Image (cartoon, rainbow, N blue to C red; front, side):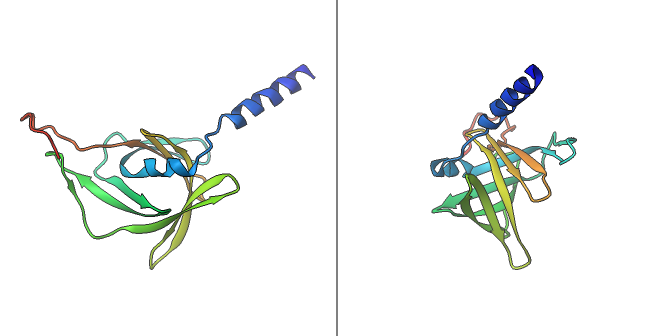
Length: 146
């Protein structure tokens, strides 16, 4: 009986520790994000040490775009005209990004958002962990990147 109580208490602690995402938190998604790892539904991880592309998000009034950008050594990003539209949806105390292209529609659940961390979960139960990214400048010339 004591073990049952301990398990129940521990379960409540884990459930209560989940981040409640508020509408004001959504603006934190704006910017450049670099994928760190993918956690698969069976628990294994795939770590990304180096990325050739970042995800760029911009959101306004629960509507946004997501596009792939390629960081350059001088601190700039190469971009193209390809992007995905999405809308932000709040449902049952969860937050979803609903994507739509002319080829497909899908949703991702927003699990965690902060100034430095972003986690999504897709319908296949894969979690995508991102860290906030900025321009890369290894030119060493001391000039500020704009």
